[in-house]
Length: 106
Image (tube, rainbow, N blue to C red; front, side, top):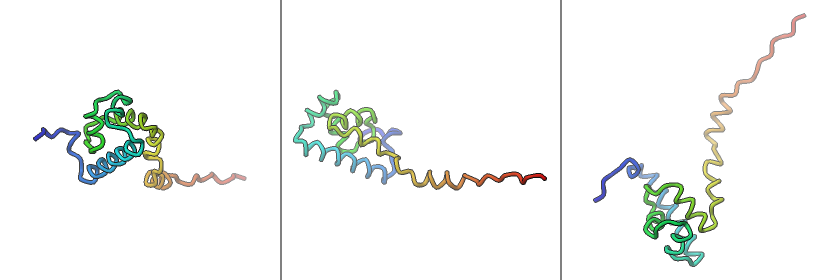
């Protein structure tokens, strides 16, 4: 059994999302008819690391994810992260107070 580190103790919801991302990356690789070894070579990492990404292991660095996405020609997908920040926009709108102007003195 591996030692639990800060990077491996994720809430269940995040673990599930990591697994989904891994599955999506694996499907993209399979659709391109590429092996794990080919992606690893193109991403300059080990085949084990690519396998870990495809399993959703949370300790793989985001830089490696980007290199794998680049090897699959999906690197622009990373730009979709946090693009639609609805909660942040609502909070920002609530913080905007209408500016009051001083009345004109006669």
